Each structure stands twice: as C-alpha cells, then as structure tokens.
Image 1 (cartoon, rainbow, N blue to C red):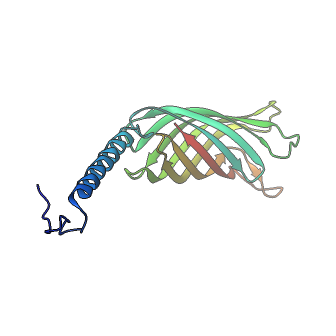
Image 2 (cartoon, rainbow, N blue to C red):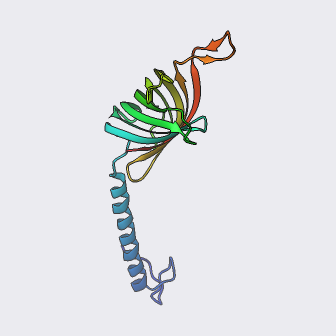
Image 3 (cartoon, rainbow, N blue to C red):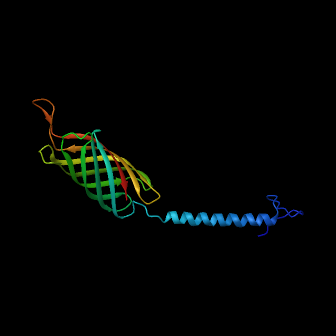
Length: 193
C-alpha cells in the first residue's frame, strides 16, 4: 500500500520523506517481529506448577529461636494441588544444650488461583523426634499453614508461609494442669522447583 504524498514528496501523515518513512516502517516491523519471537520464547518456559515431579527447599523459624531447613518432594497433579513427603532438621539459634529435632512428614498444598502469584494453604503431618534421643520430643506433629507463592520467569517459585506447628507433647501450665499440645508459630521461606 502506498502512503499518500504531498507534491514535495513528504508524507501527508507524518511529514517525513517516503524513503525515510519506508526505512522506519521496516525497522518497526523488525522490532515487532523480535518482540513476538521473544514473547513466544518466554511463554514456552515451563511453570513450576505444571503437573509432574516438584520439590522445594525451605528455611523455617519457630518462635524466633528454632531455625530449620527442610525439603519436600512430590507430585503436582494440576496447577492447584501438590502432594509430597519430606524431611527436615531444626536446632536452637543460640546453640543451647537442647537437642536438635528431626521432622519426617507428608505434605499437601493447595494453590488457590491460576496466576503465577497466588495464595496457598497447606498441611503437613508427620513425626518429630530429638537427636540425641534424650526423651525431650518424640511425638506426632501437624502443621497447618497459609502463605503466598510467586512464580519466577525461570520456571521456579518462591513461597512464604505462616503456620502453627502442633506437637503432641503436653505443656505444663501449673502443677495440676497442662495442655495436651505444644503450639509453635512457624515462618517458612521456600524455593520451589
């Protein structure tokens, strides 16, 4: 299609000479084609929430003094449901003589929305025991949590969770009364792959 010209050879639309106008048009087409190719390449990068094997590595902190590292590996059934199992290790931040803790657990997480940034709810259930086994802790553990997951362009993700670690270990309130559970608030930061 020919662009309408004035008698002096300049374009009626932009005032630029045709030869220059055509050069700019070719450059714009080249830039647009490059952007489409780049967008297509980015769209083809895999999402960390696609079905298949998934895993994560987490740093957690319970009550500001327990620091832990754990990992979970399992299967992502669709963009919303993950089921897996894992293990973790926690110890006191200041190196007190209290024994370290080992966690073995099964985990379920539900990602609420389809997008790359979404709220998450999950639950872990398993067993926690102390090392060395001085009898300090050796009980069942349940950890409900809520959080937020962010997808990265690399196909991985980040997850920030706040949970309550419920351990089946009595806590003495007075000489005659105790709670049947130990409740520990827990903040976790995970790298998902």
